[in-house]
Amino acid sequence: MPQVLEFKLPDLGEGLTEAEIVRWLVEVGDVVAIDQPVVEVETAKAMVEVPCPYGGVVTARFGEEGTELPVGSPLLTVAVGSAGEADAQGAADTGGAAGPSRTAEPKSESSGNVLVGYGTGAPAARRRRIRPERMPVVTASEPAPVAVPAAAPAAAVALAASAAAAAPASPVGPAESTGQVSSGPVAVVSPLVRKLARQHDLDLRQLTGSGPDGLILRADVESAIRAVADAATAADVVGAGAAAPAARAAAGPAGERIALRGVRGAVADKLSRSRSEIPDATCWVDADATELMAARAAMNAADGPSAGPKVSVLALLARICTAALARFPELNSTVDLAAREIVRLPGVHLGFAAQTQRGLVVPVVRDAHTRNVESLGGEIARLTEAARTGALTPAQLTGGTFTLNNYGVFGVDGSTPIINHPEAAMLGVGRIMAKPWVHNGELAVRQVVQLSLTFDHRVCDGGTAGGFLRYVADCVEQPAVLLRTL
Image (tube, rainbow, N blue to C red):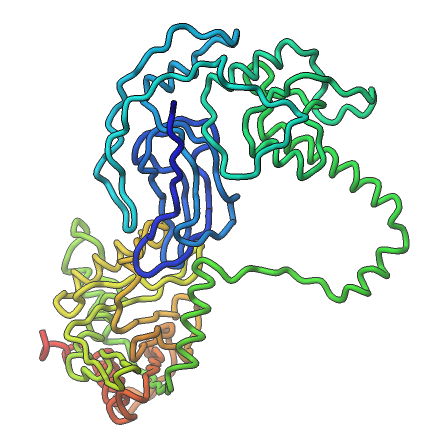
């Protein structure tokens, strides 16, 4: 007999405690292979596909799309058996009689692939095929189970479908016109389908299934529920009349409610914690970026049209930040509140803000202090593309020590950044645009940018923060300053 195994939401790492179901990749009744992705979930860090460590037939799913589940809660149950056994059961005839019992040698149930918190188990023992005559068909008069569903072998499906095929067909939806209720077994196997029908007061004997041999599927029940709801809505509209304005007035102003979960919830939690824990301060300066833009143009022109990706402004600013942090290491630190200590970090893991359809994320360039402009630009481009496609892993979104935020891409001049907790500082960069500027004692049109530095006042005072920002501005105005540290 197939063994029903429960697959729980695994620990996806980085201390995540919950995930939201974005999209199911399998349906109840599907045959899944070991390590086949079965669901796409969104955590506070990234969107990932979760593979199932078991091979067999999916007998139940837990949670609809949009549901948030804690780590360790059930995702689905799988009736484990060999691929050959599943195929044989799926091809069983519907007469209800079974031939001699045969055994099938199951394939290995262990792949060795693991995520944090779970892995595939040992090979399953030999299992015998189910004798269909020993699988009772549950009638509509029997109570539907509400516990975790057991296995639903294909032989039982065939037996129920056979009984349904012998019964007279009725139209899909409640048979209100006849007032008659058919007797005998109901062509439905899934306990979840029975539970759904019971919750909406639907009589399964009044439905004709769209599955094999009239098997009632979940889609059939949902279609009947929608039909009943549409009829009720139409009746409500007819009788509403002048009562609707009064009801709306009594209920107060209506508004859309959006749950703070997933990436949006993680951002809200981190920003709130930053504001509540960090005594931050902001300083800013306008800088003439004309020479920086000219240096960038010269670099790209020297590479030629057949060279690799062009040098980006963000890559140049990233290199300037790593040079500035080498001179002012106080800003590449964090505060240990429990020990009341400032921890200066040995390496620079540079985060940069990236806006995606899922919200604001901060990918991290590892060991940015060891990279040149070309290497920084390539890694920033790779992580940006991964952010846009939702392919960033939790590890690529954590561990930053300093953040660079180029909000100039949104067409704004300045901002007061909120520190990315538990870091100690963030540099914000506005748009670079032509402005009147005094250059060499004369008024001229120059490319000007506003630079803003928000810093944790516990790790340094204004003199250090001002020195850092002034060094960044000097490098923007005179890129040759960087040559001292290259």
